[in-house]
Image 1 (cartoon, one colour):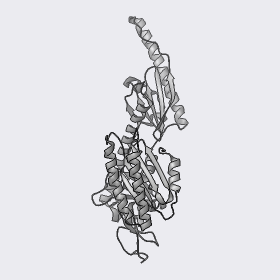
Image 2: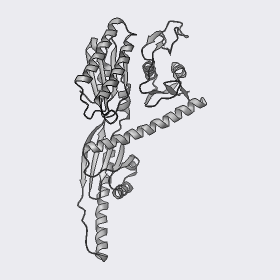
Image 3: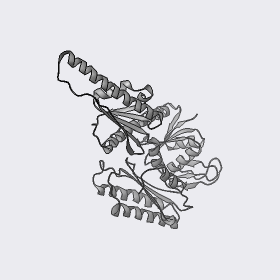
Image 4: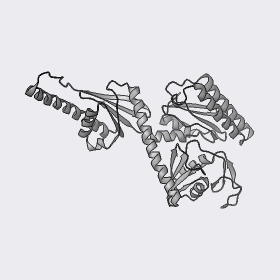
Length: 373
């Protein structure tokens, strides 16, 4: 039962089922949102009902394969699946070609069930794209622990410990001299930590950095960091020097999710402002498809879970919600199970960027785009 890795995505992306459809199911199984596992199974049943509805569009033999896929998926969830620390689950199946793949993630995934010519990988690809190489340092006046995380896997890379003198009970000048001595030791310790972080950044060990520890130690360390390292700081948090790797990873993921949410908010503001002014952006299925058909899309913006049937021209590839005949080629259009998936594929062929977001874009449409011209 593999976790999310590039190799797993590559194998699924290269999977060729011929003309037999592949069923894909995504579930948010986060125990913090859905403490009862029965809640997860109920939502899965609803999603798999939609999967069976999509099978109606298919030839009879292919439809039977999808129904078998749905049966295996719900059987797995009811009889085999143990949630543990898993927060997101993706299942891929093709009964006729004997495909079965499960992928677990340490982050929630949006609920989605779809049928297509290939496994639906957009949510997993988006998750991989947003997973930075994160570093975290927990520091106090005597010790520092440095952690690295990539693809939700954490490792404690190094520990920096320095012998800093303890308290001195004398007063007066002796106390002042001793305090300067202690401060000098603390300063050397923190400079050493700063040097280690700079070396790690130069090696490419992390892209972004989180600082944790007592406020005074964190503030002093930040003052000593090389500018290259300081510019990689994305958050500050409170963690004890004795924190477990699991506790550090949870805090790192929380901060990273917040950063992604802020990035998404900025992009949506730009998209909505551009669409409202008619400059550089469009919202809604009709306007977005027109821009895509004219190869004007720079960034296609797709909410998680969006999808609807549509049509495609078999000659030029034009996409539309319902036209029966292509206005360019004059030939009858053919149905596509999921218009959003088809739009994503077209955008990628045009070398446009695809951004997935967690919020609806507008009341009158499910997708939008930032334009090249």
